[in-house]
Image 1: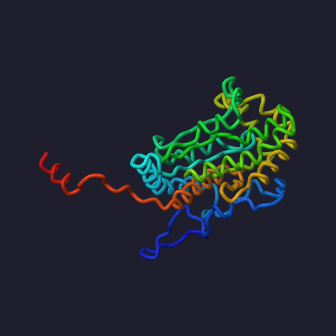
Image 2: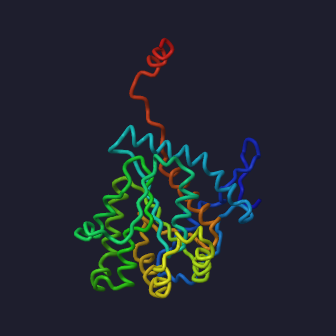
Length: 299
């Protein structure tokens, strides 16, 4: 029962809440990054016993998440220009669980308040613009929760590993990304950057599982094995991206992702904490409430 808090009024346990803010426990410290020293199977802040109670603890977050999101959405409907928004950025190696997080963690909130964007190889139109053009066009509207399945970081990851542009070009993009994210946060969007950290061995296991059942063939992509053969280069690229773009306005959170149950709970908890941090209130009525109550009563 460690990590569960008791209510001052009833003594009942509040499920699904860590003893310390998860946003602090998972926040990547500034400085050099060695991914080999970051445990992919850890479960910091988890208030339960493990895999068995994870579904219940994750589901327990749903009522509060739903209320918080509705409050955010309501502010967006009443104040289109001034309402805040939230952006959950999911980045990680193949099989790290971006789709699983979207399905299990972000699935706890109302889909009408979600804007989901998956970034694949740039289209011909996108290649005619600056690499941040398609990112900027996908930013969440006021009052919305945006989800990025991959992101602007592909332009300092795959572009770097596959040598698609000169070193001088991708090397200058870290500062551009930092400036872009600062601009976005100053405009009212809170960014939650999640690096889903999966191990080399666990990735192999998940790829094998996709080949073990015809029901999972659709999830398998032969190109994932090609990228796996470049694992050291990707780890180096990720380490640099995490180190050089770990700012106060948009810090990185490292999510240990070998345990799917922890990964999903952790991202849901991070969203909950950041929504609470917005200190939202319900929009005030723009009409005479008493008069409208009387009208409804007579209708």
